[in-house]
Image 1 (cartoon, rainbow, N blue to C red):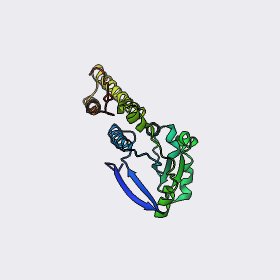
Image 2: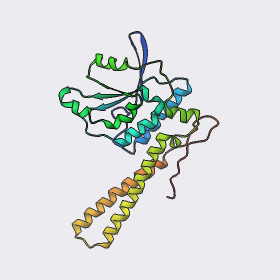
Image 3: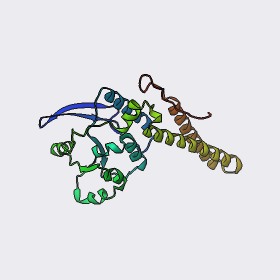
Length: 243
């Protein structure tokens, strides 16, 4: 989550010309994942229109982290698509004490579906040689478009209509519905039960927090600007429902 924009770095390894693309990461999960997806989608769309295809996708995860998000893996699989799973490499980092972290590595069934379809796993040991060992696993003969590129360029879909877009926008709408329902429940609790001043104050604070979250979600969904996916095709659409 350190990166805030897409950065492209060109380098040469053992005579191979390699282009590395560093993208912002998805949070745990966060409404701002929509902005990250939009940024990645725009880059993937532009490069594919220029005839550039990916031959490797590296997904980094700290082996020390206890945060495993099935939702974010679902988004990642929907960005890649089954055909591109063979080009995915899951890279675990922070291997400073290997003996203490092997058990953590065994707790990664969350990747099992992609691994069973050809994805691989490697450990990064915080060294140049380890980095190039991982990069050397990428086979430049397996270039192919990933699902998000095919959907937006070949099929002319807008981002909200792609598999990854539907998933994230759907999650945001569910979160918005939950926020609205929670505010209603808190207001009913506030108005229907006699409480002490301190209890009422605490309840009001909760309502304010939930209302702020609801407004932020509404603003984020409304701020989505339609744009042409491909010349001659329809625009992105996003149905918010009655507001």
